[in-house]
Image (cartoon, rainbow, N blue to C red; front, side, top):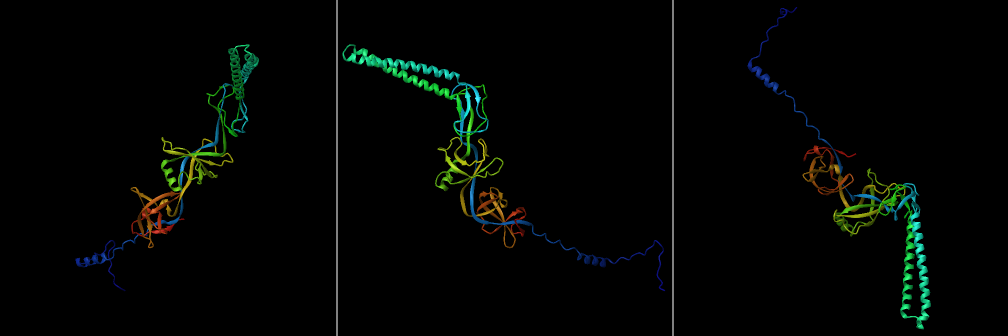
Length: 379
């Protein structure tokens, strides 16, 4: 049995320390046991898209206001009390349909008076003509003086003038009487009446209602003088007459019917520097109404074989533009470019890129010149 040395409980032997030289050696040896540096982070993930080359239609938009093809304001042409409204507000009417009736009694009396005055003038003309016929032979025989004959002839001419004036007065009275029945000048939709039965209306009281032709609708939009000159250079003068127009409504939706150029104004408005253009849009379901606002969009020219990238790839810096490209080794490069027109979600690049190059769409801030990236295609 081995004789092991035993120590009293709670007592341990003292540990003998190594000499200072041995301790230094141990410390130097442990220095070689330091941890290795952490691995480099992976290249940042970015989303890329290829530079496309295609023919690009260039569009432009202008603020537009909608009007009926004809907006006929209906006014009273004679003064009187409004007795009756013959149509329902907002209903369709035809040309010649009655719209309003004005109290006609004063105009019936005026017509009767004019007819009486005409009858009196006709009677005077008859007497003057009889005098001329009777005085003619007497003047030849010198039975009456030439002065008497001349007076008879002048009286006949005066009586004829009185008859003509009486006929004109009768015609005027008849017209005024006819104006007491106000009819629709065109076929269309009549608006809500602007006067009430019993009101005193007349030529100076404003429009009673408006009748509009709604199919087609007329759309007006102003273009700037510079736009007009640019269009003239591209199209050979003036707004392109064959341009296909789109109407964008106030809620951002695109009206399904296409519009056509109708006319351009004779002059540029000196106060705004714009030229008013008129276009027409079919409106078979009366979905459009006068007074609406929207925007007219038109293709003004086509850029052949243009380079196109998503707008999100374009980054503005101090008035210029940059994109980040990714080469075949998946390294990023910052490139200055010249931007052209914006087409929907894309933008035309006038210079700085080539077709087929990859540009970073999402992750430009992660890209560093010459640094590797992890490109992922746009989905």
